[in-house]
Image (cartoon, rainbow, N blue to C red; front, side, top):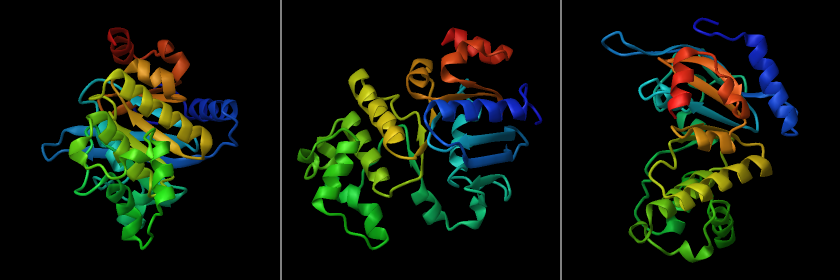
Length: 263
């Protein structure tokens, strides 16, 4: 693989070992092959990224600011359009899928929550209503519980919520679409420690209770070590290493080592 300092066989062995440790039967949910992103001024944001995202695990993505982490994440559900043949979901090129259907399967939670007009329950029901499904009150309560909120929030408006509560509502709204993959771009960077822990606990429960694959971009090394199974280190638009979270200190790439030491 161009730009890598590890072998493809080593990556496969690492992911298989991590899945076995988590009681999973293995398998790849998303394949990324030679993913490129170049600006109009011929600056490479992503440079031939190759990675397999395992099924039913949490993959952390870390690296210096401007290294291409968020750009990589947004390619996975076509928030920017990757080249055909570079991103596959369950073996199917995502460019061949209906984009709205894809984004229901591959949901995304952003750094700052944006809620629609109406109540919390209206927000949670929004996605399913687009495809003709009306969630019952009990289904809304269950989704709130998965995001660590109780049913008393149902009739509140977005303006009544703290940022941490709004972020958890946004998580429940994303989960209402029953996604197979959850993408998170710095989802707790604006939250206090308690709200951060609530979100992290919710993510770990989602991984344990279902077959969901989660990819989280974070500048917090401690957060990644707390919840991720495997970690991609991204430097200058390339994945330079993939490690188990508990072995992050063993990174060998010079810039990755410096980033980890300073973090």
